[in-house]
Length: 426
Image (tube, rainbow, N blue to C red; front, side, top):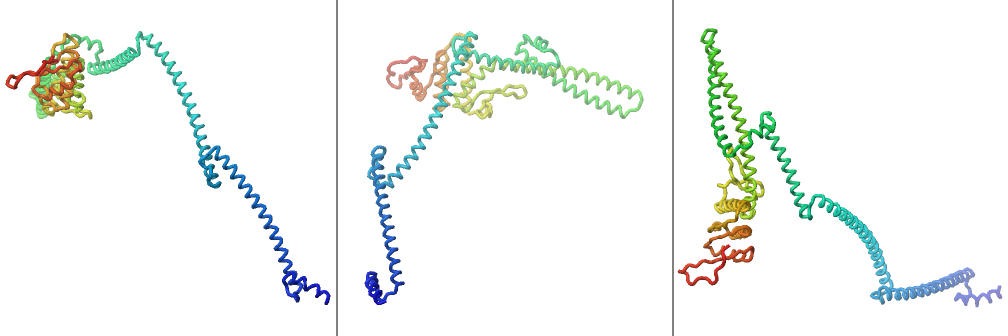
């Protein structure tokens, strides 16, 4: 034991333990020493892994730098995490851009196919149009358009004809159309108006006589009811029968007069539409320009078979002539005159159109519109406008050069020397 104690003392001293330390203490210290060496070995392994990771990171940094120098020079020198994040964002944006580009290329190819298809259809339509143009005997597309418009007008006229024939048959008391047309063929519209007035008078007289007869019949019927079977009753019955006979004749005359009245009225209306329609339409167009769009057209209303000229607003509201201002009435009168002049020019030799101070009640804008309309008329015939308003002269001077518009200023000797250089009135 003494020799064991002697050998024990230096060993525990190496463990920094007292000489009387128990074996359990020495074993505890040795266990902790073994744990320490195990931790040291583990730390050495960690150090090796860190060194390897540092080497990998350095290699990655070098590879990242080389890549940035080729693909993204603006990222050279930035920390690897920032550079990687930015490259990843750019890569994602690149993928999206490529997807969008592929979609646009696909859409472009589809549109190109549609364009090619449309060009093929256009070429086929051109060939078909050329064949139709040749078949119609037309020399160009403009003439084809005119031909189509004439065809449309013909179809509209046929439809109007069918409607008019239907109206005539409805008023013809069951007679065939040819019989009704034959009865009215060659009838003068002016004579129709006089006949219509005469029929109105006869109808009024017939209605008066009918009222008298009805009153007499009522009185006779009342008297008959109060009478017995005597001779007076027979006489009253005979008188009532006479009144009934007279009433039947009057009713027949009234019916015939009323039917004739309807036929004559419709014929007069047709005559007005055929002869007054184009003139009224053109006057309405001019009136719309002179009124600066305040009115869109002119219409004819009828009150008790009396034609009344009215102006129609763009909203379809109608204004009678007496409801217009004095300036608007002047524009209406001028529009009617201009339409009549244009119609006369289309049918005969052109004559000068001379007007004096027609713009006195017009404002500046409507005066300008009127001068433009007169300038258009001057392309067909000579237009001479007299005015003592300097504003009209200035506006006309502003139009100099358009279709031969010239200004000639007169001279009043009391106002000084005459103006230099006379112009040519137009």
